[in-house]
Image 1 (cartoon, rainbow, N blue to C red):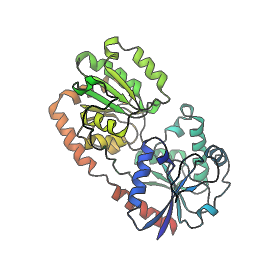
Image 2: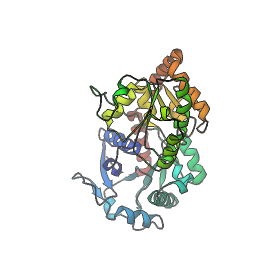
Image 3: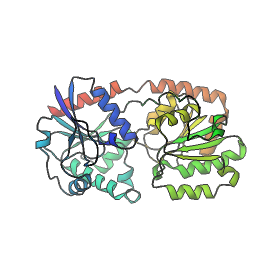
Image 4: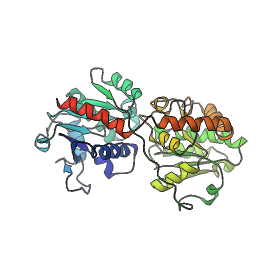
Length: 361
């Protein structure tokens, strides 16, 4: 039986895409003939009894591993066959190591990311130089990784879908009453530069001129694009601004309500490594309008209207079509239903198991 050490640190923070990827992996591995050893890089997380803690504070570990492959944590992995870092970082060890990379935004744009993220990217470079294999969640990400690491071994394993869950009965507390009856375009995700929310707001301003009843719902924690979002809102007319609802971070039940009630999911990202909201919208039979950046065409296929990420007018036109063209809406819904069936955690972990076994040998 293989023993795989898996970084479950993402499960101790906000419910990000990486947390969902880690949860799906661990849940499916628990059904296999494999022993999973969870570990975390955190001195603050409250851990389950069987979770191992890397004996370095996370900030110190990142600063150290960004410069050197020391200290090697051999004692921590004595009984382990493979170590899988699920969040861009994998600790130094002589054991076979796999590190998951979902997108290359921080590698491509270090000037836009937090210092801790830049340290993580330097630790990633060090681990790859030291022989770690890379897991990419899409072929689009793999191509960018080969540009950054020409000699690295990159294995593509698509992730499985996440379940949006049932919509709550009644109107969630954080949802304005008007949204219970008004049609709306939904955007779900952290408000960071990569998500391209200001462009969506600009496109909605054009859309609002010809669709006076439609509203825009933006749900997600405020990230590094808050200033640009404020500027986009301030340049909108007062009537348009009144139809844009910035909800902040919402819980899973509220996110499910938003997805199931939305007329369209807008996903105009500048880069994506996979895109769980795409598959969640397909599950909720919601048409998708998205950018053609990163992995989005690879994951969405024909189940979305794709536009250039920076083209405000094209985004506005596509949103208008997805709102009003019933034949197009039905085609996108049916294609989405079929497309989502191409992804499963069973298939994902089948591929991971092949990879773990090959690495262990």
